[in-house]
Length: 457
Image 1 (cartoon, rainbow, N blue to C red):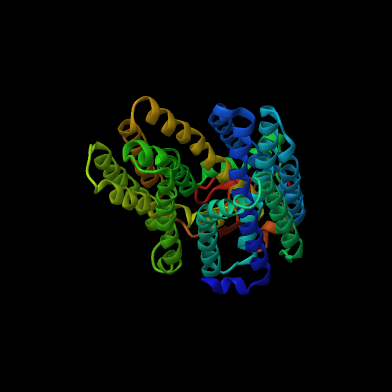
Image 2 (cartoon, one colour):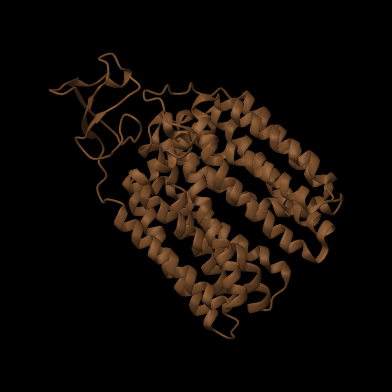
């Protein structure tokens, strides 16, 4: 898997991602301490609102960036996002009002909503070979999991010798280093669009979302996002409740539970590149989603038990299984989007995935917390488990067992020298050719042998 790091451009971009993730992790710890200083006992409410603002920024800003990304240099967009995040981190230690925290969190997460989809869309161009790209996806999954384990430990070590305000300085330096690494990377030339986007701002901002609803396997991905969100919300929101209230263990054990989830995810990310050489993305992702239902059943059995020393190790196994199943769904996602979106639409497609997946978390996070607090853990397990199972079954129904490699179709209304017709042959009504799935102004539908009259010739 480490062979992809021989590619200088990818090595610099991966290092930029990793350093930025660590910086974000330090900021998360520091924000909690800052909220306590400002709000005292209401710090939990402040942090909850800040997390909601984070999700809203992801859902709203990513599509807007996708609408203009094809007209902006990708390197400049990512560097600007990093510099914006560094600037926000610089100001955070000086805030003394809750509204200032909310404003800066919105700016910080808006910049992340610009950086991440653009970064994700660049990697397929940097690593065009399927095997290399698959290894890069696994590396990215490992980076997220390692950051969730490493950043809190690093923050704890730093807090033993410095005050939390200095953690924001570490965050700022991380984003500046990320920007420097992006500047040093030689990015491939952007693919020129053969079908320039038409329509107003709304049409451009929703182009990636419309692609998701038009392509069958991307419609299935929407359901898979919801299944993963149900499981990850259960782990993220209720781990502390299971450890402290349900099992009566100390607060120091909570990271062990979260680490178990991360370990399960990392193990799958390590083995998936070899598995995906022999097994289709559909088989891996759908099996991972169906596994979530079984894991929820196991969690329900643990939750129903009133006592027993076996519950703690059983919970660790369940959390690891959740991590493994989620990784089975999430790791191949980039491959699926790369195959389903034209090269010049990739940033819009990744932006749509970023926005739509976080829409699922925006639903499941508060649901996991509210049900667990008001109706009990078992109610939360049942509700989120039902969501995961229904979403998984819907994904199976939406995703065709056989994906068309190429769709034959005709174009009318295009000039003979249009760049999209390079490999086309004359047909009675226009030009006929075949290629992979594309949904844009030239291809408003994915139906085979479709005749489309297109503008922008």
